Image 1: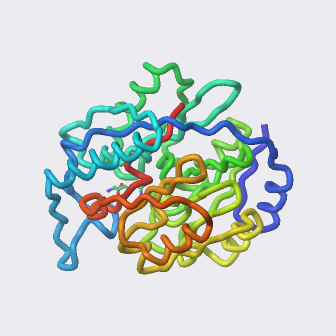
Image 2 (image 1 turned 90 degrees about the vertical axis):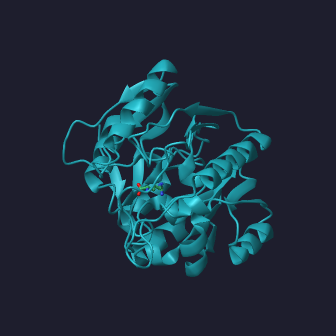
Image 3 (image 1 turned 180 degrees about the vertical axis):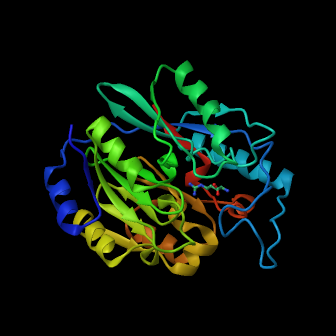
Length: 302
Ligand code: ARG
């Protein structure tokens, strides 16, 4: 099989022209990881230290309450949530978007396990692997040790086509997408992340409906902005400060209608309302201290 990955506008245009237009089956259930062992024990992104360079301190009870409220919000919006137990030695495991990449392939649910960049987080992956095996997924792994990939944090399904958007940056690399594209015959449009504040694609790119995407322009090159503009008729540009402080792009949308996001991104909320989307604000302050919010606190599954 051939590989279809691109970073140039011409190659991306070719991928978009060939992309199958039938709707791709995308997962609608959810996995979350219980938050009892969530802490900040090390710093692997710019948010995990405070302005004095000290590790952030998590208010444990508040973190648990915020996690419970988020889960309840998802359930109230009709999503079935399964939980994996956190592990005391894995303080970041609650960020469930990063350990795996779920996709529909050969008429069955498939999962590709991440090769996480930080050694602190690699041991989270087997916990997810057990869940997928118990739930009859076809499980795939990367063999090569020079591949890095952080799952749904960087690999985002495009529901309108059988197409994936892949962030390349501090966590995932081009080699990963080349291999994924070849092995699963997946067209992948890669987007280099050019600003250190936006270290996963899900911190700066959110597909809200088949034709609407929300992005943080500073995270992307001019070429990538043109590619995004060529695919989506509506591109909502998120204010830089709102994205930085409230992780606006790290929202999650249910059924192309209900957008769940951290409270406080007022300009973004107005833009969502103008686009006829319903807004559900939640509080994830403790998780922002670790560089994550709504989108990365769950994994979509079949
Ligand atoms: N502290 C975690 C890390 O740096 C946060 C992960 C947030 N996940 C995300 N997809 N943005 O890995």
